[in-house]
Picture 1: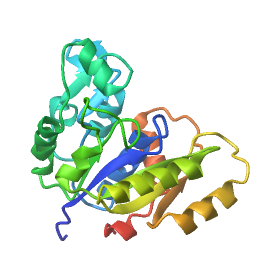
Picture 2: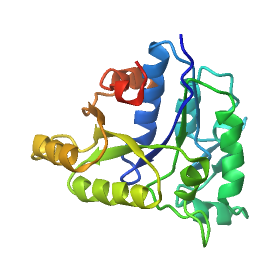
Picture 3: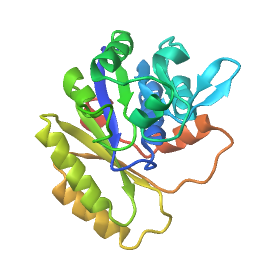
Picture 4: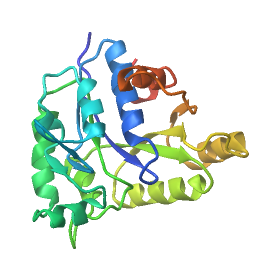
Length: 236
């Protein structure tokens, strides 16, 4: 099988829209197609102290879907205890975030040369890292195309279009977007999808319905994968 070396940055229209859920679905889909996978969530705020150190559930889910042999510390090098904006959570423990350092961590995973490597952001596109930089500076520095997770709820059209506009202003390509149902029965769902398809200048990679709880995150990721089409990304 031909080596792909596809690399994307995963962002969302807001926090809590399912970035990790979609990311693990993308990884599971690629792995099912026979491709190697790797991922990194360079900053995670909201980590639990365990016997192994600080651990973040999102990062653990990503690690579970990596076929490359990665350590937790490679997948989540900046683990912050408090569930708040990363720059504030870092300051609370005496740390300062900067994009150059984060890019170095990312290259450690990117150089694994997996067929599909995902870099997952935190929150939305303009999450601050410090007084001068936002997390958006990271994919700019890494020159990564973007996959946007749109949380399907009231207001999602505005959030999606503003995010896509900011991505374009930063000189990056929106490679695709995923509609993730997070609000149950959304009024005029089909009309919202049609509007987004018309206005977002990128292919729709899948529509994820509100899925029933599963016994494991692994099973849930494969549920998500079943609703994704990666052919527009050159993964088939």
